[in-house]
Image (cartoon, rainbow, N blue to C red):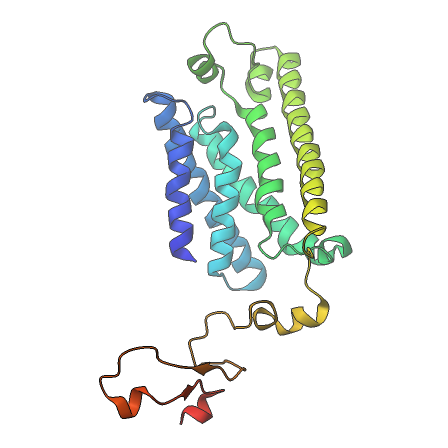
Length: 262
């Protein structure tokens, strides 16, 4: 898990840093903010686990990493580092609350198969990052990316101090509108895809098959070597030219459990 998370973090650095399509201050800032927000989010998530549950976990660390990466992506090259730390703190706490508290209390969430908590790490953190980008986007960074004739307004925070609060509110509304459009698009298109797939195969296993798990779906258990946890006796023949005929011509059976192996 940690190996995969590390590769994900490394790859995320590439596409956040490569988003400006040029090497310069914005690309450098985007890479730095990506690491800063992700590290902050991870530490906040682990801290909340320690405070509430008296124990941190690898899964919690990976979830905190994911929320930080997702949150900073919309504004990686648009916000200052102090704002990045704040975004990391919020991305490590708000999705933590929705996953660890609201999810367990909600009947709706309990009935949805979301094993990896994708709603919290991507939907909640993504919307949070989009809105916070509309709050902390720095005017001079916007000009560096889009030029002086840009039509994008500064973040709400900076527009307040510039005496142009209306423009900041307008940009924040655009961010909210964009998040709403993406949410509706995903719901509609994903639903259509699921309807199409459902006409071919079942979207969800039967309850009795879920109780059995991988063995019911694939005829084998996950992470089980031959003879280690297998329930079914499987005949196996060796189709090779025998070096020791008395051994290789025998018909071998895979043991059902460890006792048969002994």
